[in-house]
Length: 181
Image 1 (cartoon, one colour):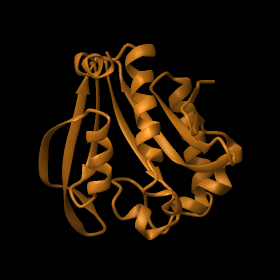
Image 2 (cartoon, rainbow, N blue to C red):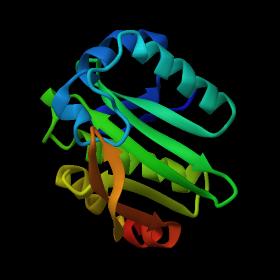
Image 3 (tube, helix red, strand yellow):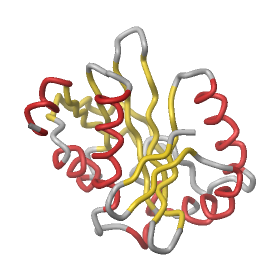
Image 4 (spheres, rainbow, N blue to C red):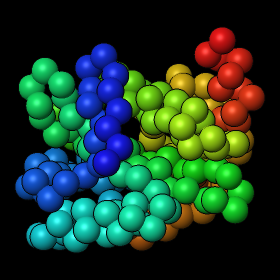
């Protein structure tokens, strides 16, 4: 099992014991409304199904889903997912954090470490992510870790009966090296 560390976080693959905390935090209108794939209300038992699905994805070598754990309190706070595209040597990131943990830099810290893992250990060429245009906090995370804005797809995603614009960001290995040396 892959376990990564930052100053304040432990990032480890999801476990069955995360289901209760995951379901409690993710079943929040404010968390779901600015994410591409989180439903609201979150279905009862959905966390365990999600954990099992992501375990299979990991077993096949197609991606990772890391639990964001506060080191000091050993508290589950959210997830960072990485879906691998081996053919193109890239990965797409997705993340969410429980509302009470917002605006404290946890996601930026975690995404920075996952990006390091992707480039240094998985030897990826590119890492990219998307955020609804109405979610500037998510785009801010991407910018802080060195991703560059690549464009907006207008009315690209249907969320709750409304078409949403989606901003795309990416970072190449060569950009990562420039930032870290």
